[in-house]
Structures are given as structure tokens and as C-alpha cells.
Amino acid sequence: MLCLRSHLSYPFSTSSFSRALSPSKPLRHHLKPYSHSSPSRPSFKMTSSSSSQSVVEHIVLFKVKDNTDPSKVNTMVNELTSLISLDQVLHLTVGPILRNRSSSLTFTHLLHSRYKSKQDLQSYSDHPNHLAVVRGSVLPIVDDLMAVDWVAEDLSGDVVTPQASAIRVSFLKLKENVSDEVKGEVLGVIREVPQKFKGISQLSYGENFSPARAKGFSIASLGVFPGTRELEAVDSNEELLNNEKDKVRGHLESVLVIDYVVPPVPAYTASL
Image 1 (cartoon, rainbow, N blue to C red):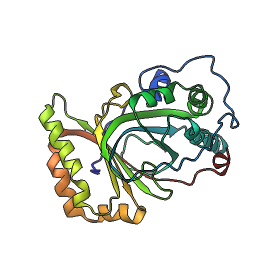
Image 2: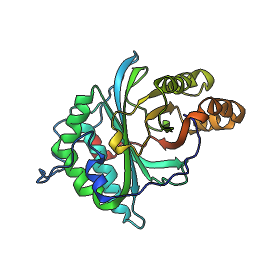
Image 3: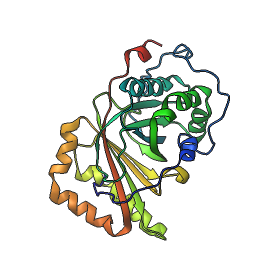
Image 4: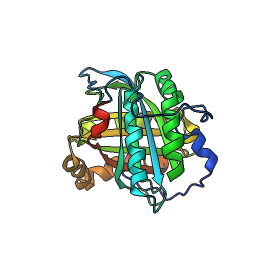
């Protein structure tokens, strides 16, 4: 939730794509063809809960190649969105990023999905439909990506983030050899954010458990706001914001902050 800027750049290699959307396994060859008619149940799930629960968070950031045909970008977004039809997925949203607050990691699109367990996330990643979408619609038009996964303990509120909600995703890269005590201090500061900034309707945070795909970022948080007005109100309180940053600044190497607005579900996915 802290809005520090990153000043690091990361080399890109084509091989990193083959691991990026799977928690631990590479993409497979000879995939079954994917079609919009393949899901057998509604694509949009009205899953929600008002009680606290444990949820596995999965965030993927994509950088679409410059000058990509817009129709190919739309196909990527629509086919990724259609993966909500898979049994393991509690929630999935994907679309263009509203604001990228990093000067070096210039991502263009974000995918956020939720699962009951790490096993469900792995099953989603291994599913032939998911692999076919990645291979056919994502990899040909993307030249950089990263992914972060964490377990959100005691997540309160709806599992499904409402359309038009504003989301702020923050990834923290800690300095080398920091102690578990320091990690606990940083997580403690994040935990208290909703008490300081009242516009947040939901906060998820935790330690990344997929380090190979996260470019060194090890702590993540995701704040949900009713809309962009509430999100911008956080930034307007500069004194309080700087006070919170100062509590953790000395432990951090860099921070990546992404703002995103949950788009409407494409019409065709709602009719599957």
C-alpha cells in the first residue's frame, strides 16, 4: 500500500515466460485446443463471503509489446477473463492498468485471481484451457511479465471484487539478509493501513511463495477501494502517507505500486 518508486530495471528472457503463469511447472507442449464453447458452466461467479477466510492471491503483470494490434490485446484479455469458468477459480479479473508507479517496470495489464488453496492455484495453472490461452494469446504479444502469489489470512469481505472497484497492488523488495523480525515489522505496518486510511474496503497481504517469478519482490499487499475517488484520497493525505512510508523505508530496496480498476466482464463470457 506504500507508494515508493522503484528505480531498478530487470533483464528479460524469453524462457521466463514459460514459467510465469504457473506456480512451479513450465508450460506444456501439445496442448488441447481452447474454444469459447469449452466451459460447461457460467463464466461469471457470484462468489462472496462476509466472514473472514483464508484465500490464495495470484497477481500477474503483463507488458504488451509496443505497436501490438489492439484486436490481439482484446483477445488476450477476453480469453484470460474466460478462465473464470474453471472450477478452481473463485474470482478473476484482467484488464489495462490505470497507473504504473514504477519508472522502470512499465507493465500495461494486470490479472488478479483468487483460490481456496495452493493446490487449486496449481490445478488452474496446469489446466489445458489455461495453458492454451497463455500459449496462443499471451506469449506472442507480451515481452515482459511478473507474478506474485501469497496466502491472505483472515480476508474479510467479498471474495469477488465488484466492477468499478479501484485496486492498489504493492510489491515490496526487502534488503538482503533482513531478519524475520524485520519482515514481521513490515507486515505489521501493512496490517494497520486500513485503520489509518478509512477509504479501504478490503486489504489482503502476505509473503510471496513463488519467488522464481517475482523479480525479487517478497511481500505483497492488495487494497480494494469503492472507486478511484477513495483511492486518490489516500494520496492526498501526504503527511500521513509519508509517516507510514518512513516506518519501513529503511528496510526496503524497492517498491512497485500498480493501480487498477476492475472492468466489466465481457458480454460473451457472461453467456457461456
